[in-house]
Amino acid sequence: MSAALLEIEGLTKRFGGVTAVGDCSFSVPEGSVTALVGPNGSGKTTAFNLITGYLRADAGAIRFAGSSIRKPNPVSLARRGLTRTFQQARVFPDLTLVQNMVAALQQPWRAALRRAVRKPEQARALELLEEFGLARLAEERAGNLSYGQKKLLEFAAVLMADPRLVLLDEPTAGVNPLLVDQIEQRIRDLNARGLTFLLVEHNMNLVMRLSDPVVVLDHGTKLAEGSPDVVRTDPRVLEAYLGG
Image 1: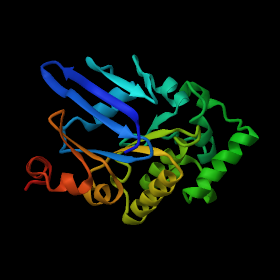
Image 2: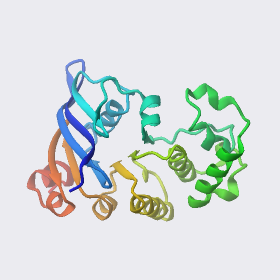
Image 3: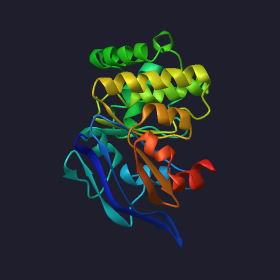
């Protein structure tokens, strides 16, 4: 197996008396599509928020590309090559698709209000929009897009800075089957080019087709980890997640 690009050790987050993530450890091998799955409330999105600096951990260590991340910050992590999407796609509805793409490079976010787009950035944005099947809508307001198209736009936008690792939070939730297929193919194509993914996803058929390894959380702790074949037959996983 490849060396770990992302290493999580003993990650812990409590909200009052409730432990949302407890002493959680796992790694994301470079070049992999790693899935983080589990029942609702198992701590998946909280783990994402801790890794990317949207929440502060109570304990634990995070390493990315061999370096310790002592105080994760979304802006600095993006500059180092780690980006993410969200369960509810975050786009600027009054900006065009191209402007949304360029805004992904303009941190802090208030810079997104600048509407001028430089030619190299526009060329990169149009290239990605073409890859995601959105080029014909490049000058449309993002607010006019369907829900699934907004998910595609956000996915495309996080690629503007050529990241090494992308965290995808429920990329196919609420998306029609045709767009699910498109998102899956984009992940496969990008992964074949060397991009690493950490994926939170409830579509277990997609997870089992796409991901290796699979990490299973339950009540904030790691329950199991391994290949899809190993995880899908683990009695603890069947009980906790699949209802077996």
